[in-house]
Length: 200
Image (cartoon, rainbow, N blue to C red):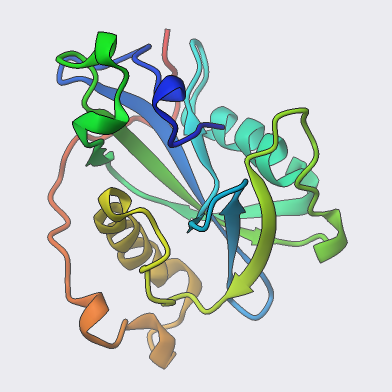
């Protein structure tokens, strides 16, 4: 769990380039729609995401964040796929606390594609005392991203493009994005994370 507020952009566990390890979650339902959460007291929508703690693997962090932000347990979902490499976004300087400027640059993320095998009623935005979202909805997979904070949009495009193959068959027209908002992105190999790697 994390916030876009300056005071909560942490500078802990940074790699040598100044990026904090993080996981992103794309949760889908039986109709292959995706979960979007509305950030509490804000007008922006996003996917669940959060930092990887000391000693956690990305998968462990994903399950923890999924429960903290969405209230779901491992038995409520199945993992369909994940990104092969880290995807990074840089946080603009004015979002970063002054004492962290020069060391903290942003987030590097492993993204997980999940299928909800439980019910919509299993979703709870009040699973913790510090909720991330105050509303949620299902949307089409390729929904335009104008309601996502601008510096995260490229990473969202990269994650959705890379993971679509796990959700849609080759014959499914929904596998290919359409429209000018979904121009192909450069999926550069950034840094591969081993399946069993944790952060120590």
